Each structure stands twice: as structure tokens, then as C-alpha cells.
Image (cartoon, rainbow, N blue to C red):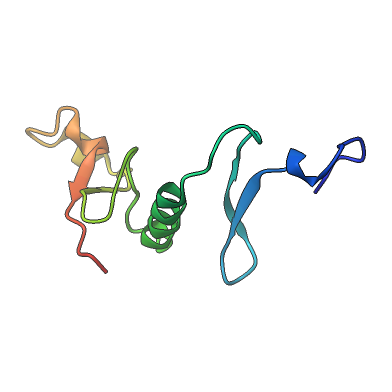
Length: 98
């Protein structure tokens, strides 16, 4: 993962998040002059686990216990239902903590 012209291994500051099946789910890259946040790394792992089923998504800034997003529906009746105006594509649910 190092460029052949790199002076040393400190040029590489990346973290790969790989699931049990060996699929890379996320990666983060930092320059050597910027510290990495362990708290953010753990938040990302928790969010990846939470969203793995495809039943929910985590919004920007999500933390465990916060509201989750439900996938948008493709059903026209949901988009056209009374009171649906703009909320048919932004549906939330409570995090069950599991």
C-alpha cells in the first residue's frame, strides 16, 4: 500500500474497515500531520454494523441511540399520500440499541 517513491512508511495513514466476508466497507485516510480519532473510528464501525442489514441507514453525525433513517420508498402512493409532502423520502425510526 506504499508508493514506491515514499521516503518511509509514515506516508501512509489509512484505516480499512473490512467485514467478516472480506469486503471493504469503508476507508479513512489522514495525512501524517493530522491525528486520527478513535472515537470516530468506533462510531463508523457501529454505524456500519447498524446499516449492514439494509433495513436502516445512519444519517450524518449519527451516534448510537440517535434516530436512524429508513430507506426511501419507491411506492408512488407513499409519495402522494396526504401529508406526505416532503417526508416520504426522509423517514426516521428510533435506534433500538441492538
